[in-house]
Amino acid sequence: MLQPHNVLSLFSPPQRRLQPSTPEHVTMECLTLFRKPDLEGLQEFLPVPVNLSSLAPPVLVGGAWIYETGPLAGCAYFLDTAARRVLPGHVLRRCRVLSSLHIGSMCQQRVAITACTGEETVLLWRLQGRILERAGRNDSSAGDGSDPVGGGSGSSNASDTSTGRSSGSQESSSASSTFRHQQQQQQQQQPDSVGDSRLPTSAGAPGGVTDSRSWMLESIRRDDSSDETDLPTKTHPRASPEAVMLAQLQALRSGDVTQASSYNLWSRGGKSGSVRSAPGPRLFVWELILSGTGCWVVESIKAMVQ
Image (cartoon, rainbow, N blue to C red; front, side, top):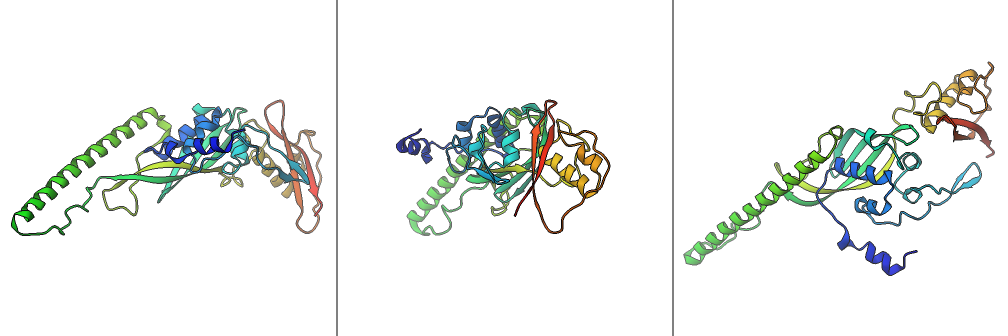
């Protein structure tokens, strides 16, 4: 266990490497680190350094305390259950960014992930950009018309101001050229499926000014936008446990016992019948396990006493 002075020296701000980046580049770097998983390397892309090796706090599920001991258990504060399940050991070559939306200093991406078990899911990545510098327009603070006019001193000041502007313009042009060269190298290193990695123009910046940002990972959670329309009709290694549970619940709502039982571990051919429900809201807990065929199946459904 690290001592307090070691923790402070490890997480001191001067050691944070804030470099110009793009959301797509950060996503691909984090995917590589999550796959190992490399918890120490992830610190570079987190807004606040934390101890990711600690265990997640217990969760009360169905009247029992559940203690998570997975490799990403310490990332529970910014990864939901689905992300912590599929990211370790995922198939990196099959990951792809489906869409990307920039809103000011925030960026949200939909990323398709294939777990090592074959499970396929879409995760929502939320990233935050920190402005490092702005390039594309010279700083006009020097020589803004407040210089004295008249006499030799005025001419000298005007000449100095002109020289300062020229020097500032050369430095800005050099910085902009260096940054564009770095961006071209990043684009060549990224897969074709990543998409456009150009930095967006800041909404609050003047026209033609591009913000140089360092993007940080804020959160990752499962995309549930297609839960009601893209449910599996049978168990399959590509189906997530959330999708299997929702598919069985949909079959139970419609009274299709045969279809509902097809998601169970203990029964593959359910008998026809009717489903009766008690009046009022009830709380149920689905317990699913990964079968020998690599499919998530329902082991039991428990009604909780309120």
